[in-house]
Length: 603
Image 1 (tube, rainbow, N blue to C red):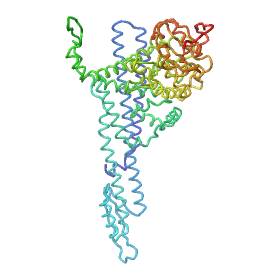
Image 2 (image 1 turned 30 degrees about the horizontal axis):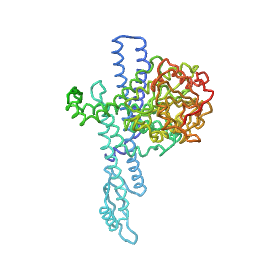
Image 3 (image 1 turned 45 degrees about the horizontal axis):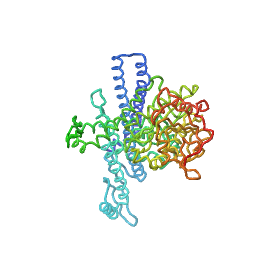
Image 4 (image 1 turned 180 degrees about the horizontal axis):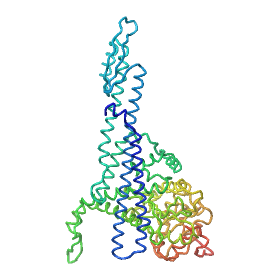
């Protein structure tokens, strides 16, 4: 970049263009939301049949297109701001050098050289002629030493200062040229292919584009306020509120994973960030799955040994399994979980189901998924549900559906108040009932994250009123909630346990909620509570294990009409309705089990 171009450069023009792209992205976002929450809903509710189904599928594709446009426009906006930032920094250096040169009686020429006037050093009789010097960018210890030697020898005292100004000008021009060279390919890469299908490859390119913009914009991003290190949710909320719209857009476009994981940020912001991460990860998983051969269809074969027939896996299948099995299973589970999350997005509006908010997402480890039905930032009643053993991203669909059913019934019982129910798969749950679930470290490791998330719901609150909040745990999830209360302050008003194997404390009063606000369900045929008596219960004075199903614990024992360990949220049951009444703040109206007149615990 030459001197005239850099002098004429107007960062504001690029910043205005960035604002335009951001506005376009906002319009694409509004169009996506209109399709998902209004147009698609109207079509599903009013038109039936194959044609309506086909139209709905096309609308889903159009929604994805708008989501892609929104994401790419955000990247373009950030890239333009980053380019303007880098070149503006170079321009400021140029202008400072030129101003210093003029103040010192030198003239900056169109090619960047500097002319200096005649002069003489102290003690010299003869005046040395003026001249012109050209600078060089960068420099090294050797070249700097040679320049100092030349300055000392030169008879004109203005020579050295002119050379300094020329070098500063050369540095500024080189910095601007480097910015131009760095950003040009990144901006050219931010374009879609020429079809109307947003493919997995397109979303993979989005991830690549994001990395490119982040790499090129290091100086720009370094200039932005960073999230507080190890900040509380309140700290995170204050940081986000303190950012300008441009800075928020930069963080959302270049670091969606960071933004989506920060407790305390507004639910719509986290949702926007995590949906980008979801789309990118789904594309990556599908493309990686496409590189794995399908498993052989002849998985099993019959053999006969010593007169006995048996069925074993074929050699072909075992060869495939040994080579690809673990990777295929991991990717398939991730794919299933992401599809279940998308299915929940697609159900918005069905029978009044509110918009979903993806408040956390990752495919790392067993996976993370935190999904809310309704905006918790404005809801009058919140419920945060923790699933138990064997929960992971691949099985999250069932946990999401449990909170959908809870939302439906709680909304009916809430006397017009708004409700948000949240599935919180924010920890590594035990994956094996026998080998893993007896250990407490899964709950102890995950409990601080649960407490931070709960506190974040306060920090992101968008209305003045305080919500009524319920913690719901199932199976090992109840152990995590108990650990959260034991390790810190459990910031909720009610606690519901279902199928609990023990919660690490022996009394309901140790759970940080008002007296009478701990509720428990144990269904007929649910063996987990009995098994848990020897694992996660609290201990009373004589060392006996106590779990929430025991009268000694002091929880309200809710009437439960389901059977087994997994049907506490079965549609149409009293088990579900009783939970929903607590969520809606109407615990006094639910049916309790009768308390035995006398109780002697077996030892």
